[in-house]
Length: 327
Image (cartoon, rainbow, N blue to C red; front, side, top):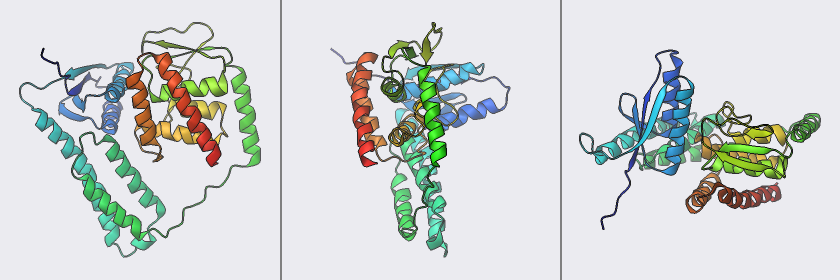
């Protein structure tokens, strides 16, 4: 019996209204952050994977919400482009990014004042390299050169001391605690609704809700669009939800900031969820890769969302205790 091999690619095919002008740029930037590459006008490709499907679904919803149209499909190239040529497109895109990092690191190394390089410049290059690695889906060869240049640059500024972050005042801390307590009282014994097929942000957010906001919370997992909430239901991490992404914050960060603003352990977990979910390497948490791998294992082994939530709750319980002990 011949085995069916899944198509290796995902395509996003979209149409965007001509106005407003910023919409096309917004979508382009979003796809760039995912590491997608164009193969035709308004057609972008990513290697097939569960995370890639979810990422493109978010983009498609954003396009539809702004009056556009988007379709996601699995694809295998039969005529015209070959798999090798598509792989080369990914390598070219990431190699160009790596070359920019390597060139700037080299310029700073050649500068006589490199030893006095401000820490912000070095941190910026670290973040940029991490961003590229995160979207380097097919292992572009230019990575090794960029990493070596950055390592050399780091050696040249290794004596720079880190700036201490000034602590928040006790008055501000107490006020934030009172605000979080008042907010929690309005969200007791609720049904919390989110998109089905939960992944990292929804898993972590559901754990935070049940542990810190609503211990008797009930969860409902629904289709991504078309759902109308019933009374006493609260939506999170979905379109038009009461709690969802805000600006550069993922849903977990929004919930933690609203209900537990002074919890350092939660803030650290939020940085991990942010790095995994938004893929912008803002915090460069060393734990992110391991947590991402564990979440992928939960998704692969558990079909039902309730089971995923149960397994994820144990993971985040342990992670939270780890950060509390570290503090």
